Amino acid sequence: MASNRVIVDRLREVVGPQVIVDRDVVASYTTDWTRRFEGRSVAVVRPASTEEVAGVVAACRELGVALVPQGGNTGLVGGGVPLHDEVVLSLRRLQTLEPIDTLAGQVTAGAGVVLSALHQAARAAGWAYGVDFASRDSATVGGMVATNAGGTHVLRYGDTRAQLLGLEAVLGTGSVVSHLGGLVKDNTGYHLPGLVCGSEGTLAVVTAARLHLVPAMPCRTVAVLAFPTVSHALDASAVFRRSLPALEASELFLSSGLELVCSVTGMRAPFSGLHPVYLLVEVADHADPTEALAEATSSVDHVIEVVVATDPSRRAELWRYREAHTEAINTLGPPHKLDVALPLGSLAEFIDRVPETVQAIAPAARTWLFGHAGDGNVHVNVSGLPPDDDRVDEGVLRMVGDFGGSISAEHGIGAAKRRWLYLSRTTDEISAFRALKRALDPDGVLNPNVLLPTDGA
Image (cartoon, rainbow, N blue to C red; front, side, top):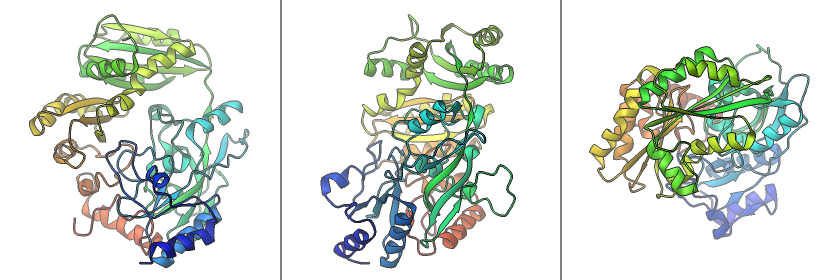
């Protein structure tokens, strides 16, 4: 491999002064959001166009240097940081956001556009974007496509792949593929956007995406319901999914998580006392959906208490109980984050069993559970473990496999879970993944140390 000086000089030929080598600045790109995964890099390169990205990829291929594409660096599985001394390819400067196509209900956004800016632009044009989650102010379009981000509205609108109508991307060869026309019906061959989406930067570097928008729903109601058990809360979620076409979110959290959130944020709990399980639901429509939500709630069994909000500030406060979980857990030290999906019929049993499984392996550890009740996605967070102690990870992920679930529902496999990919994918599937990687990135330039297990694993 080329020397550091040669690498930096070659990258500067492509992007000029946008090559960062100052150690203190580079350090902000080499640690992931959880602080569990930390690497190092000779340089961070910050291209401002697809052409510059292609030039960077071609240069690194020529020099035999691996790249880690990075967006807002909000990943939780070590997939966007240089754990093996890769060059960091930051895409934050690709911030072009084209005017909303109001007739088609579509928009083309650069990889560096943050989710909140996308929401704001869509809203100003009378539309909305169907994906949302707590890190909206830092998560970028490129990162969302790379990880097939889901979030809180999947049960109504689907994940990022469901919004993706086209993309522009640079392959590992340095060549550019671009298909941004936005045709809803286009049966002219392989669907490259669907293939690249969720590939974690291993097949191509996304530089822009053509995205589907959804109707803006001006009337919203949020409710938090308390239940005695997880099973009762999930039964209620099923009732809401069946009876409320306007249902956008169905989110689960537990008393321990709520206590921690209130302790860290200073918020008061939604009820005078604590209850074992909470379900947050949001309905949105063109007309006030509060009455429909109240009617559906009246048919739900085992509800202990309910609080309802219709004005924006109070709705945001109720959402804060759920969305502040991640930041509150991070105050306890770098957590082990296991974002998994279970068949809905097994979700209650899994949530009930996880703390026992964790305690049997690491008695001093604490388990925090919350997630998306509507689509079976639960975030398993474990605090009080050394960053490199993966015994709990293995125990929990094996349980997920036993239940027929997925070891990653969001955020991807990254570096954290690659050794356990076989729990969710067969040997033949992993071989097909490797064949695709070799075809689109023959020299292994793009994020070679994530997703796929090491050879022989």
